[in-house]
Structure formats: structure tokens, C-alpha cells
Length: 398
Image (cartoon, rainbow, N blue to C red):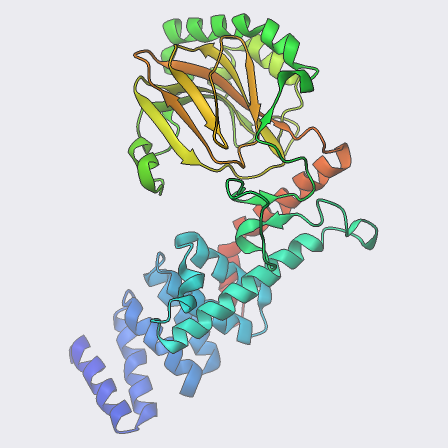
């Protein structure tokens, strides 16, 4: 009997209301065709309705295995996990669906989504927002539950309406209310700025020496990696050397081969209040923008830190625009801004532009608030890392 015959016979059995036989035929089919995601999905739903509840979880699990990039597989599995009394695992499934397709949990708003799917998407949206928001709040005791960081917003999973005072201000990931909100910060506001600017030529000399003598050790990379999903004009820079970076720190980790070529630069960086989840900075890099290229309007991730640029190789006709205000880079001078505001960068010259970029803590945050932010990010990172392990709750006996 062919695989198609099993499906056809199952359809006939269900049409004749012989549900037990139809269910058995579907089970036999997926045993023979473990990569048939559509039938695993169908089987999971039928198991929920008329079959075995635990076998439904197993079918959802195998549907994800067969279609790991289909967000609906995770949404349906998450719904089963919720009904099973597994809110943490359900949130993990919904979060993975959102990661694959940020719009998947909003399908219920379209009006043209099938009712069973719309219902699950709406519930997934509600559950993930409530779960993740409460997870953040649980970090804080009653004594500090009204602190600025306790009231911070994880933008993509917040459970309350969110509005900003300006349409050009929109942190993409994490927003702290009551911080001073302005696009630009002046050099005079930072006690460390004068010393850094006074030693900018040291940074430039180390960079030029490294580019001339040890280019292979620098690990120059496209700033937007190949395969990154980016919309609009920024898509032209994905995987492109027209906007490239030399990392000294990336994702809280030092780039040892490159860093060894910049001892004085790193000494200067060590004296700054750089933002990071650990003791070291999260990100320090040289940004290189080729002639006649622009970085289109975009928003940064959070207002808890400020982005700082030191101009190193800066031709004329190069500028950065933040919240509609245009400023030109200058040799050895600091530009500091909140990248939660809409911003873009432009090199309209015929030469390469290079600036050193790093982030510092927002100056109004105290030490305890900085620690609370680090703990919030670490908690979420651990949870995100554990999400796929939580899907084993779909399998009987786990």
C-alpha cells in the first residue's frame, strides 16, 4: 500500500465517521513518512480532538522537527503546552515562532486567518507578553518594584500599551522610562571626553599600522552579516564590505587577534564607563563606510546606553543625522547620541570614512540600576538559550 493510499483511506474513514480507523491510518502514515510535516500537524490536531492527548504532544514535537522554520508548528505546539499546564514551555514555543516570523503572533488581526489558527495566534500573543513581562517583574522585590528598571519595557513582549513622546524615538528592544531623553549629548557632559579626544591620534596610528602590517589579523567583516533579514535600503549592505567593521569587542567578548594590535586603544577604552553585560564592554569596533555609501534610517535597541563615535579618517561630505539633526564627524572629536532615535549615516565623499564606535551607560543611571539592567538581560539570555530544551515537554514521560 502506498503512502498516498494511506492518506486517502484515512480521509474515507473520517468521512464515514470511522474515526478510530482513520486515526490509525494517519499514525501509520507518519511512521513511514517522518518528514511529512503537514500530516504530523493534522495528526496532532486530531489526536487532541478524538485521540490520545499525550500522543498529540508527540505529534506536535515531530511536526516541529519536520518543519523547524514554520512558526505555526510552534504556535500549535505552544497551545498544547498551555493546555498541559506548562506555561514556561508554551512561552518558549511562542517565542521561537516570533523569532522565525515577528508577525506570526499577530495573524489574528488580519481577518483572513482560519479561526482555529487565529485563536491560537491571539492566545500565543497574550500568553507570551504576560509571561515575559512577569518574568522581568519577578526580578525585583517589593521594595524596588517601582524602580525605573523594574518598570522597564521589553518592547517586543510587553503586556501593556506603549507610547513614546516623539514619533522618531523607538528603542527596538528595551526601554527605560524616566531617563533623560534627547537625541544628542555634548562632549562637555562627559568628564572623560577631553582625555579621549587628546589621545585620538594614538588610536589612529594603531589602526593605520594594523591595516598596513597585519590586515589578516583584523578579521574585517561586513557589519551586517550574510543572511541577516533587513528591510528597505539597508538590505544592500547585508554581507557587503561597503559597511564593514573591525571588532575589538563583540557581544561582550574580546577579539584577541585584533585586540593584541591595539594596546593603547584598549587602555583608553578601559577608562570609560562602557556599557556591557559583564565587566568588559559589549561592543567596541572600527566602522568603515566606503565612498558614496549611506546607512539608511534605523533605530537602536535601547536607551540605557549612548552610542559614541570618535572621528579617525573623516573626509569632507560625511555626516550622521539623528532625529533630523545633521552633524559632521570631525577628526579626533567625540559625537555622542541616543540611537533609540531615528538615525542614519552618510559618506558622500570619494574616500573611506573610519570612526571608532563604542557605547557608554546613560549618564543618569546609577550603579544599582546598571546592575539591575545586566541581571535583566542575563536572565532573558539564559531563558532564550533554554527554549528548545523546553519543547521536550511535548514528549510523553519528560
